[in-house]
Amino acid sequence: MLLIVVALKKNIRIGIADRHKFVHDGIRLFCEHQSNNFQIIFHAFTCDEIERNLSLEKIDVLVMDVNFPLAEGVHLCEKIREKYKELRILVFAEYDDISLMAKLFKCGVDCYLKKTEGFDSLRYAITQVHEVGYCYLYDMSAVLKTSPMEVPPPESKKHKSLQLSSKEKAVIALIREELTTKQIARELGLHVKTIEFHKRNIIEKSNSKKILGAIDYLVSHNIIPAKKADPYQKKPA
Image 1 (cartoon, rainbow, N blue to C red):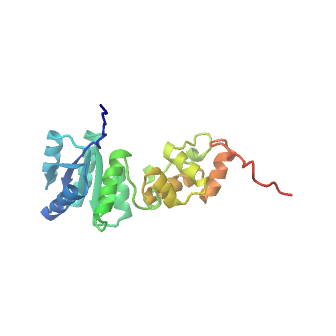
Image 2 (cartoon, helix red, strand yellow; image 1 turned 45 degrees about the vertical axis):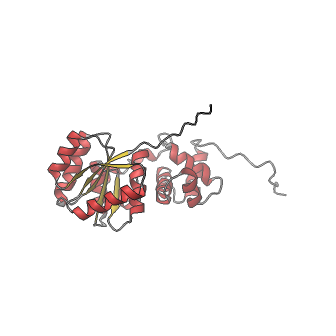
């Protein structure tokens, strides 16, 4: 007898926090009809309800509007991060505000999503924060400049202490294979904006201006191995 075992995707347990019922209803309907492994565990409409539900239910991702009002929402993010270290926090807001994004990431938020984004972006963001631990959908360079605590100290740019993450190494390897950003995203199963974020990180870590210059720097300082020469490539006359 042939036994076939099918590996099922583990459900992502989600809490929704927003003051408006139509937001809850929209996200609930989306999760029910567009995603097989999103499971909504609770709905919360106030800061007190968020804290009470978190104390009673275990979830993987909290999707919340930061405006409870705003000052309370930011403070709540700090409290949640301090108490629930493993919880992933995805915040959405109607503001396109760099200083707010910087403040939220300092508080321990794992993803910032503008309310102008569609449900496809929400699905991607939830999946990404659950699997990877973070999701950056926008250009983070301005956020890092606004948030001095997040900017690495000058000595971290020296090659002796420069370290690359496994994802950055994977991106570099595919760049050296002459893949485009879209192709790299497809190959690694990541969003194009996430690949762009990794490339900017590599450039900043090596104190370079362009990604190719960053790769040259990393090779010259023995941080990554030199690319092997093609034995069939013609030598210059």
